Image 1 (spheres, rainbow, N blue to C red):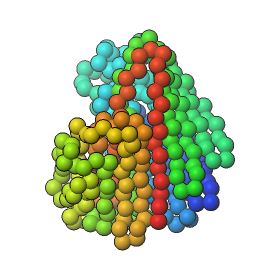
Image 2 (spheres, helix red, strand yellow):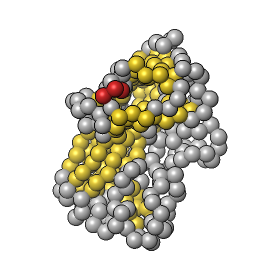
Image 3 (cartoon, rainbow, N blue to C red):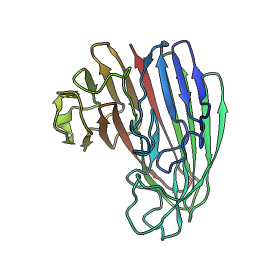
Image 4 (spheres, rainbow, N blue to C red):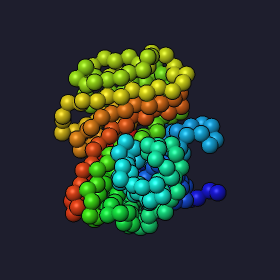
Length: 292
């Protein structure tokens, strides 16, 4: 079934944003603020899908974020048959004693999402459901200005237990449909030599830059840990022959960075850690800009 997206548009950018719970009903990605299409100046495109094969993967597309990829809220003390909260999604049912697996489909009671739209922004508020003392309210605002978009997050612990988890945006991207390979350069927010890195063969490193030695013919994955502390974290992806690209800046401490991809998609992922005592609130922003 086809569902009409929410449109945000100015003189340079046109965004399509999925309606929560209509485009995607999975249990991995946050249902709110899912940017499925970005077009710059009426011609340059940036979004890609997780997989080109039907029913393969977890349904990722474009700019979609996930909470609890590594540390799901309340999973460690959840008994079989009880529920645990997946922020931005709903209450998930724990079916057995296996480790949490984001590839797995869990029984779901979705959260209620309120949506308010203005000319150049859209606001999402996820109403919490209490799960064994775990409860938090998520507010997210996406706004556009000139060639940039901003995603602002406000997460409030309204429950009785500590919220400990992680968050990142998966960033399924590709510039104008150009396959991943030597024509691209990815600039990271740190010198790779200052981190603990696990890098796939075929990816070349020069300071803070990564390149692909050959056209990509399969999956690749890199992980960067123990990163230097800095106030602003930005990655920048450029298709060098055309000069077209995009970047993401994060104003929160960067816990680690992962890089995943295939021939049709590249995903730089900046992870943050979240630790909220009852009553505490955390705010952070991811700023994207698109250039040609």
